Image 1 (cartoon, rainbow, N blue to C red):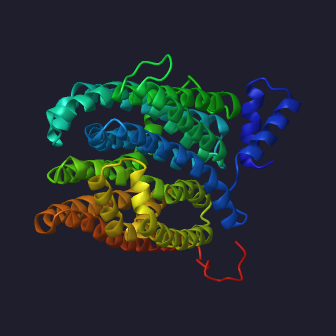
Image 2 (cartoon, one colour):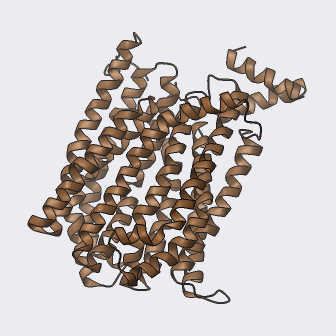
Image 3 (cartoon, rainbow, N blue to C red):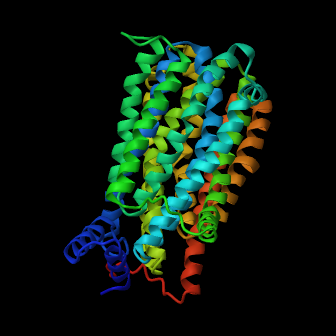
Length: 490
């Protein structure tokens, strides 16, 4: 019996399973937790990515639906949503960082480590997420007006922001815990369940939004508060089902966290990835906050257009983001056994896909950007600015995809620092300063052009450095890299 199977068998018998039930349970675990170190790479990436796509679609539905219905309230409310975007991204980045660290840790241990230890790793990750969220939500709730005032929001818009964020902050735990839990489930090789949960949550939010915003039927008319409350309710339902899967099906949660020393050890491993990953992600909302302030100087219509474009952009990039999340799992499984050929081959496929997707999307935007923007607003100025944004920045989406894929892959190989460094260079060294300079010289076109330059430059450099890093790891482990030999079946 293999070491992993033997350790799981012992653990099951200690929990008073009879021999028949223990063997049956082991077969179920083996079937459910996929081994990605062998098999057809293209097929595995596709089978893992499409359910992730549904999960990402659920997240995008949240943003697009909120934007659509709030846009019906007026330009001021739409601008308020745009101002809230960087802060929401900030909080989500904290949760996502822990989720990424957890996904990397679990995926590198799920096929080689005792199941009981993996169970405690997952439980400690959830505990860490709760502690971090409580701290930052408390601080955020107490500083709504000062924070958004510093971003350039005026009094008339601040009231709408306060209406939305005061309720949204209450629901943050319902956003954070499912985010971490879904990453645990994905690390086992199951991307279907998280995808179903996230899309279901997005659909529920889409149903509740108009009811609570406009007050149809027995529901009260709540405006911005209604949009936030719909999000809280929808996320709460997601939390319930994530916990059921982790506790009942996967048996990966427990109230016993082990000794304090072991808890801190797991947190250290998670934060080794989560720290740089979170910093890298936090750079984006901080920089977008700065860019929003620059754009605010061109009027509320420009801010509203930037908010609309940003949410459409999330929709466009969610396919590549889904593939990036899958790469963390795929690379984690293969790095645990030093199978570098499969890692490099998966990155080759990902490169081709990202650039192809970027070209296709840009053509679609050139043809239909006006129709797409008009879905969210009938303000002609907002629509024209949105079109201008996509015309200038849209051609760089394939390269932005390379940045996203590189970021995920660095976390998968347990090398998170390049990920953070490239994110910092892209946003703080290139995008934000060039946007400020560009706004002074050529106006809004200069701001959008800065994004184009940052995406293309860092996309090329980060992906090249990733390939170089993996080849160095292979040499360090005395593993020959022969993935370019097409005759070898991977």
